[in-house]
Length: 380
Image (cartoon, rainbow, N blue to C red; front, side, top):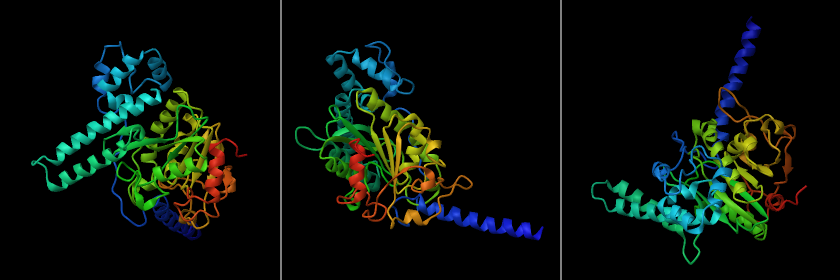
C-alpha cells in the first residue's frame, strides 16, 4: 500500500507540474502577462432581428441556421439592385453572412465600419461618459478608420463584428479570381486593436498574411482571419479549449462560405492557440491543407483523430519555447499531443531559420518558403 501510495503521489506531482507548465505553453506570444477570462462572442451579429423581419424579398436566409450554400444560392437569384438594397439596409449582417458574394461583403463591411466609426466618435463626445470611456471610444473609432483605409479601393474587409473586443478578417489579393486561397488563423491576444499592431510584425494576422501573400508573389489570395474571441495573456482561457470550442464553428463556417462563394478549397495556416481552433474545426472545414506552427496541440492524439481529408502539416522551430513544455491534456487543461512530433503523423515543415514563437512567417525563413509552396498547391 505504501508503494502504491508513493507511486500515486509522484504521479500527482507530475500532473501538477504538467498542468502548471501547460498554462504557460498555451498562452501564445504574451510573455508573462496575466489574463482575465474572456466572454466568447457567438451567434449572429447585431441587426439580425431587423434582417429576419425584412420581407421585401420574401424570407431572407437566417444567419443562425442557413448553410453557406443556401445563402450563396439565394444571392445568386437576386438582381444587382436587390443585392445592393440588402447591403445598404443590413450592412453588418450581409458583411458577415458566409456564402454572400465576396464583393458584396467588402461593400457591406465598409458601410458597417463607417457606421461604427461614426458611432464611436459620437460616444467620444458624450459628456455623460467617463474620460476612460471616451478615450476607449476614440481608440475604437481610430481602429475602424484605419480598417477603412484610404485611396479609391480601401482595404478588403470580409468580416467585421464590433461586439466585445472586436473581430475582423481582411483579404490580401483578389479572392474572386485567385486560383489558390489561404486563411491565416492567429493565436492569443488578437482582436480589433491588435489585428495589425506594429510591435509584433509577423505574429499578427496582418503581418502573417502579408508575408505569405508576398512569398507566393501574389498568386494566392490570403485571408487574415481574426473571427473568434482569443485568450488574453496567461490564464484558464489559454490553457483550456473553451474559446477554441466557440471559435471552431465560426472558422469552419467561414471556410465553407468561401467555397460556397466560388473560392477553391483553401490552405489554412494556424498559429499557436489558433491551431487548437483549427483542430476542432478540421472535420467540418473544407480545407485542402491544414498547417500548424508553434502549436500547443490540436485536441487530438494524431492526424486520424482530426477526421479531415486535408493534408496536415506542422512546424516548430528549435528555439520556440512552446516545444520545451509538455504537450498534455490533464483535468481539462492543455491541448494534447504535439503535432510536430513524428508520432502525430503530420507532414513536417522545416523551421530551422524561424526565430522563436513568432518567426514562422518572417521573410527568408525556410518555414515561409514551404508555407508558400503549400499555399500554391505544389508542396509534396
